[in-house]
Image (tube, rainbow, N blue to C red):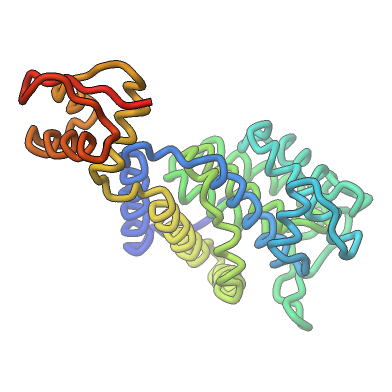
Length: 320
């Protein structure tokens, strides 16, 4: 089976913008996101993805469950959250182009919620949006063949990974291979493919942004259904990815360096060892000799540094 889509100017422009943002993240000094960002992203991701499915637990309640604390709520909704937390925690165990891995992810995601967890659906289904049927999925007997074709596309197609991941997400919703849980597994697989392409996507809560733009999400799915290709959904997906990455850049952008922050970094580096102005500049490669002199003088005047010698021959050490 073919999985048709068109490469529009909007798609090309958005991919270029996303790649520029990835370059900015990689180029930031000390840009590796901190562990608290991974935790925050996981919480927002789980809460956002399940909220799309109707789960009413708040971000605070999801945080409590993430931390192993007890919350009051529907046992079914709590189980949904705990399952999703576990699946995202084990993301690195899944192979994004393996059908067996997808079935395992669904089994874990729907454990204790669905008797057919990890098994292709056996009945025909229609997707409800509100009170109306918005999509009639392919017949159940076609599901194994369609899924084999989809994962063959993932293995053999030469399209950009940002396009592949969006196509996979859309086709999972179109095929609707499981009795339930298709949406949350589709969004998880989209994130898995993105993270496989660029590990920085582990820190981008795309699912949370989809929740914030839920009506546009369903509109993009419906437009692609009517058109018979996934172009509209790819454009929507890339918009969400771009917004998520833009937020990450803001979250990890270092504060403007000051003499205080530079002296703190030098103290962490030198400890109680004596050092010269030249040594100081080696760990602050972008500052001038004059700026280094001003920093060191400020350190002496504040009592943070002890200076021995004079002018260029001076050596310094941190007190304490």
